Image (cartoon, rainbow, N blue to C red; front, side, top):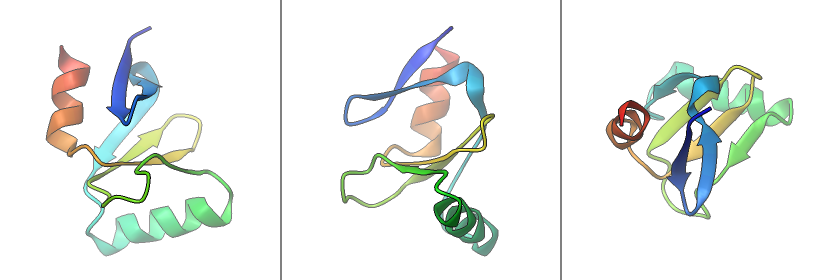
Length: 77
């Protein structure tokens, strides 16, 4: 099991990550909205701008302040 920092000392298991995307497109905004309605949204931005959306195997959607590129580097280390 590999744990990475997803922002503000919040850690995630990178083995459970399905995808990491940018939050700007309409389909991703719908994913965020649907996850919020189902109580499957985890916001770890602490009020800052969302730079990436992390999709987990459990169906949870995590909002992070780190860019997708930063998270990808951390996963591949």
